Image (tube, rainbow, N blue to C red; front, top):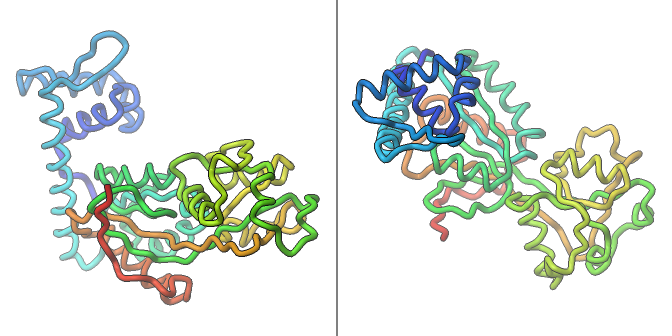
Length: 318
């Protein structure tokens, strides 16, 4: 469904988002001169400069900051209006902006999106991936309507709905001495070369919390490398660079499991968690976002993978 937003405001929002005429042009499939012309025309209409183009940096002027707030509100209201009108057609249509932490984006959402899009062919989904912290910020700033994260968010006024059970497991190379053992002691892990996800990752947060309960401090861990994705962790383990934690979902269908790497239990430790749906409390979901949320909850319940789900709740964390 076409956007109802004024095109100049669309261009303005993209330049403001990236603080770059070139990046805005690339996202909008325009030439950079075309973007510059749209901004110039908007500034002439308003009789005020919206961007400071001094030097090599682009920044918003105070007038630009003020306009951006209203432009984002306008975009949100027009999207809601589009979805409300589309409901009278009896079918869902329009844009569906999603964000997910990397594990969920790689191993969980593709199957769900495939099923959803088959039932709703007029919906156009966009999926952005990042770590838990990045996805929460995107939801807060209304860059995406619905987020899927792995760990507890450090945010406020968010609606959280657990939807899928997960467990983190310790992956070791198949040739590692631990591969022949049923389990290891927690203190052995502290001495091992450990591959960790980057700061802000939900996986890292869960692992550090669980180890601290066993009196293993972060500073005591022998972290030899930080990596920004589960696939990178798996490849590094396979190469013998160390041991690392990954989601069970990440190895469920991996042909390398058993031959390149295997799971080792840690005595007295289980790293269980729920994947969580995140949306803004202040903005009630509507249109494709609401439909997809309901679909995800219904699908994970029907397959039994979302059992023991708590009710939606609102967090107000500092």
